[in-house]
Amino acid sequence: MLDVRRLRLLRELARRGTIAAVAEALSFSPSAVSQQLGVLEREAGLPLLERTGRRVRLTPAGQNLVHHAEAVLERLEQAEADLAEARSGLAGALRIGAFPTATRAIVPAALTALARRHPGLEPMVCETDPAAVAHALRAGDLDVALVHAYDFVPAAEEPGLATEPLYGEAMYLAAPAGETTGPPPGTGQDAALRAHADAPWITATSGTLCHAMTVRACQAAGFTPRVRHQVDEFATVLALVAAGQGVAVVPQLGVAGPAGPGVRLTRLVMQRRTNLAFRSGAGAHPAVAAFGAALRASVPPELAGDASPGFPGTQSGGR
Image (cartoon, rainbow, N blue to C red):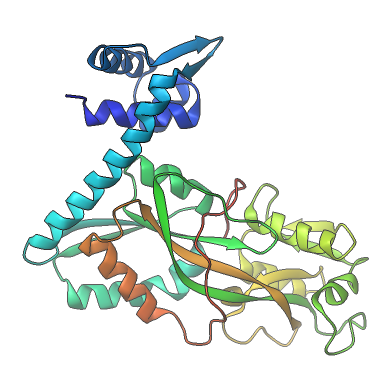
């Protein structure tokens, strides 16, 4: 009988390419990973791995076994969900990952509703960059998480994980209220952005999804933004805009409430879409399903549009 834990190691090796990367991701030593994969080969009765320099390549038999492992691990998640549903009441820890704006605007109300309906459940929120969610779910550090993706930064496919749409947010161009530069009312997104092509810009830090979103939106409008400030918190971004330090693109939850007299907001066409992410097969788990239902009931009605399933791209996520 093949050991499920070793199958999980083989699956991670197929994704990460080196034993060292698997060991780091799962908090094992490289020698322990090598030993367990060697045991799996003996259980299988034929070679599963080929070494090519520092990397390890799966043999055809190894690749075939990975496909079976994906199906087996998904069915195990479903089995655990069925067992949890059969138990009376929900209890125990539910580890939740969320990015800051959702943690502030949506998650607290969801946790209140969850505590009222399932007092035995112990939700534990960890602020998690959307780009780190896939690894945290696979490693078992999280049970469920909120992730987002922007237009201009397509969602990535993540084998072994699934998402359900939660909500979509409008995006806004934030500019100093007193400036004279600006597009005429009713102009499109590209024209609104191009009107500030010569202005200094405020973006998130380089390498983040939020930074990529702003840069790509501006490039689609025909220019590359001249970035003066890099800030990863929307309230600070708006304060800098109000002080005349530049312009920025911010999501709807980032401008919740009045933007202040020093900021003029222009709605753009693009959106930010937020989804609930979990391991494949775990969506039916009662605790995950209960949290998802509480989240949906807590989404402010003014949020625009629907989310689209998927994970953020390879850049770090955002706020």
